[in-house]
Image (cartoon, rainbow, N blue to C red; front, top):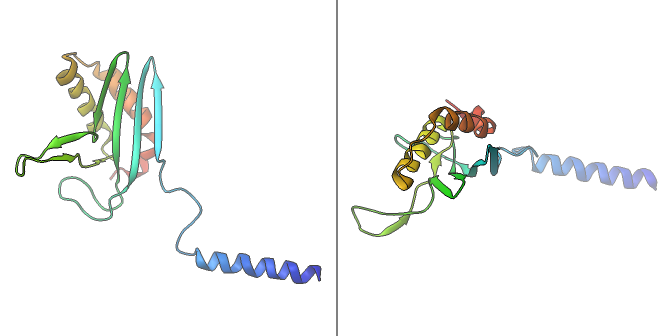
Length: 142
């Protein structure tokens, strides 16, 4: 009887493997990743990957999401929030950014510091922070 239970268990596992043959149990990408350094925090929220080519934005398989930089009484983000569409004049959620563009997104965060707070970014620090934060997404760089 013990071997019958074992055989049933083995058959169920084999059945499960057949059902899951198109996927593995490994996560495809980190959903949320944060890197902290010297009182600053860069957070990446990944919503998934682009499923098809999007002109000038992404290739299929590129991760998409939002990036936020928090510091002492400062918060800027790229790919989050709302904006008004100039064509239809309605407020829409911003399109998720291509997370494979790590350096470009870090530069955009620096420009947001200029726009929102009228502060000059320390580019060397920001780019180093961004490089560390985007390491889990390096395999997506094209």
